[in-house]
Amino acid sequence: MSSLTNANSNDTTRPIASSASAVSSKQAERFQPQLTRHLNTAALQEIQDGFTAVTGLEAVIIDADNAAITQPTVTDERQAEREQALRDTLRADGAGPLKERFEVPILVNDRRMGAIVLTGERLGAGAQPGGETCEQLADRFAIAGEHRGAFCKSIQSIISGRESEAVRFVYLLADVIAEVCRQDIAVRQRADELSTLYRLGALLAGQRDVEHVLKVVAASATEVINVKAASIRLLNEAGDRLQPEAVFGLSKAYMQKGPIILEKSPIDMVSLTGRVVYVEDMATDPRVLYPQDAEREGLASILSAGMIYRGQQVGVMRVYTAETRHFTEFEQNLLLALAQAAAAAIQNVRLAADRSEARRVQRQVKLAGQVQRRLMPAEAPKMPPFDVAGRYEPCFELGGDFYDYMPLEHSLGLIVGDVVGKGVPASLLMATVRAAFRAHAEDTYDLDEVMAKVNAGLSRDTLDNEFATVFYATLDTRSRRMTYCSAGHDPALLLRDGKFIELTDGGMVLGVDGEAEFDKGIVDLQPGDVLVAYSDGLTDAMNFDHEKFGRRRVRQAILDTAAGPARGIVNHVLWQMRRFIGLKDQNDDVTLLAVKVGEPDQNSE
Image (tube, rainbow, N blue to C red; front, side, top):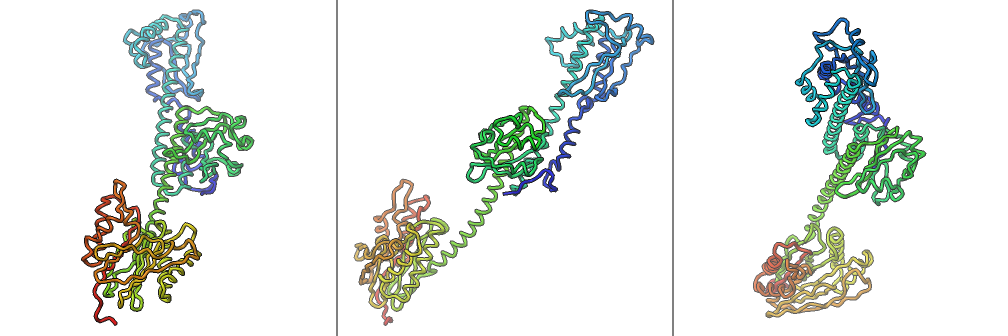
């Protein structure tokens, strides 16, 4: 389908992340350890001031580079001699007095994002909060109602001079700040991921190129999950192996390391059931097919998800990390969502291509149908004493039935044929049979010889399951003599004096036995006779009760209008058939030809 795409290729197919360096720089910017990205300076200052107001201890909040974020807490009661006062008032309560500088780090996801520093100074008497201050502080830190009593008791212990409680409290405060940061990071990350999914979905919705879709998805998965690389492999037509189609961040050599046969790859087999598969270390996991290649490529952990659309397996998407990593549940669900979106986009592209191809084929079939219609007689010939009419109604755009008139010297040739099958193959075979009759009827007088020649050619050029049934007759305009031959066709009907005669002389179907022999029948027609030849689609037409129109109804319809012209007979029979089956679709082509015999033409030779 498409060639492999290397991460270093100089293409412009990435609408979301243009290169690996762009991904890393964006990730670094998004998750850089800055407290102020998650809590603004005013909020941090308020937290510090609240702590100082409650504990009487001076503190400052610093960032990861040890630079102060907050300003010293200003109180009207600060004493010029506060250092000496602190030494006079601090008491050991089992944990020893506070050091002159005590630092509590703020850790978010194992990263130091800052610290709360106790300077060892105690402020003056103004730091004696009342109950209102305790409640306000509890609200600020979202302390639940049932814990407020213990919280305020802890505050009072700090006020009373128990420095160990102050240490516990400052740790609690650092944890609160860290938790707020973690939540904010999670919210930002979810927002980024959802934004990426939205942009990816909007982008894929308008794509009509599978190769471009795969490149975009692989690049976007690398960015949004913050991994080293991603790959997409699609199932081949046989559905037994995965073929590399798109890659981001991996070498071409790695993607061509060897075949991925589905039954030998448990990771991919499980992925294609709709579950996400995690491998912590590719070098040691026995499920990995090519661990040495993964180690040379510098790959550690992988996450694999099946690309499935409406129950149909499409392929597998994987993301790779350079170091062992545990993926969160959200990241796993995110990869699964990306894989499903990619599968839907790919299938939509394929369906669009199929629809386009179907429309192209339909146009060709329509044109072929128009050509086939032109092969049928545009109008009936005027050859008294015979009044002739015919109709052809295909059940599809193309069909295998046909009828034809062939004006010959002092006679008229009539053919009604039915080729096995429907659609394009039947229409091609029909054209062949029609052309063969026209070619042989021009220079061969005897009908049985014409039938034998057509049969020999058809048997030679077709398969065993390709054959045709034909009723062929010639009508002499001078003597009203009809010579006919039926090759496996439904017997034509001759109505005379209210009674039907079946015309059965002939032989087997055409195209099966090239050495077959055929008989011919001769009938001297009389004025008022009605000849009707039809294909089996007429008698086999079925209504919703699965009841066939049948020969009895055909005969009755002919009797109803036998006194009228040939066109009226044809139209009435077909109308009765349509009335019988109702709104049910035809299941076969229907061809009908009628001849009404009149008085001899006095001007004929």
